[in-house]
Length: 262
Length: 262
DNA sequence: GAGTGGTCTAGACCACTGT
DNA sequence: CAGTGGTCTAGACCACTCC
Image (cartoon, rainbow over all chains, first blue to last red; front, top):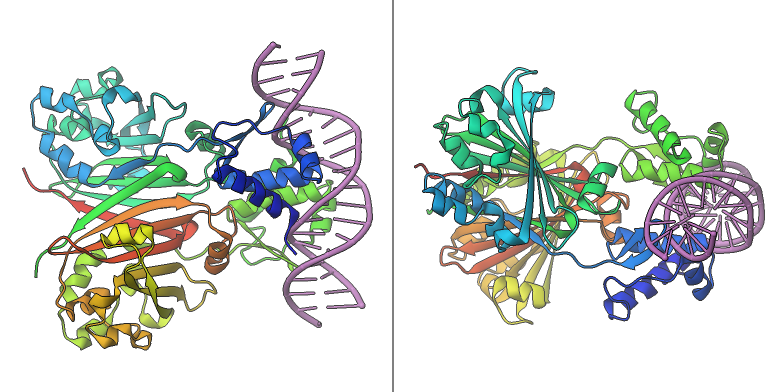
């Protein structure tokens, strides 16, 4: 015997997949749906919550339930690191032409909206360990949000950290109004005489916090992908640490590993 | 004004973090808890479902709610690929000594339990595209489950695909009782004269299907990490495709990208 | 069979959104 | 203000686990 809320979810899912319900469509009120499916409102709500967890339905408090618009997939490849390094010493015209995010997404700069906020902070236990510096060391925290012009919420939230005293050697690097910086962080580091030698990225997934769900425009039940990137210079010191938070339902992270020949 | 179910969840979360409720502890029955928190059973259940989504509480139908045991973190690094390649031509004693999974997890073979099932299948649209072969091409599907001896459910579920006619050249490779194969897939390919040149891995996250939730011992609400690995030989042909499904709450995927010097 | 969590119901009342 | 979804309640009945 099947569960009633699963049956209802199945029926609605089929309607969505078959195109009888189109992305953006407003569903009837829950009371009306409950009547239509000859069930109670709580059971109807349970069915809708299943579809919400699958990312097919979006609930908007006080308004209605909607069929979710499929959102553009965002790719992020580790090829970007070498690509960015190769350009870091190029002239400004070349650096200004395209950034790593446009390269990943295949879009023009005009299709994307950036925002950046800088802030001085101190290393907590976690960051101190990542950098290999004492807890409390002054850091520059830079928060980046990137979104498609046509979509409401950002598709990634980046928190990047640098050791404050290191970047302070170039005052421009402390000024958030210089963003987006042509050539990205690797060019910024180049102005300090720093060359990157290796980048390590760690990926995990977990349910979003309520703040993340709101910022990224995902509903609870859709996971976030977390990427921690640690950049080492050619001497092996960690010079930048970034935490990238992405909505799991529309992000793909790509890593290419070339192998040495026999 | 805060929501009652959030307040209750906060209180229980605090009890767990403070150690007043220990991992493995059985919680009182929901009726008893509801009484204790002066609320109704449905509200109590909603509070528990919040903690379940966070991975702090495990619900066991017909038995009780339990404080979840934190589970061992599994790391999986792309360094394993070069490491495995370096050993693929080594003698059997060396290859038998340790496998890539033990290397990733830092455990002995005895701490891990493997299982493998082989099956002949045909390429669907997705796999045909990944391999660059016509749909319907015969493939060898190999399903691997790996778990800690001390834990119940596997921490990864791997589906690996090879082109059937290619591997059929070595009959041993069609025999699942040869698993675990010392030296792994790269040694298996070596017996066919195939050398890998590059590996591309794509990571995404999504809510688990009910089957995955059951197999991996995670509850709905905890995300799964999906990794698709495509191995190319030195001519650029895709020779192996693997789909790795991991519980997002205890898996960390590590990717190291060395950068060429200026 | 006893005890547990899971499903389903019916309805009151609150919070949010738009007009 | 009207209409919507969100929270909370009280209780019946079913499904599962273990003794």
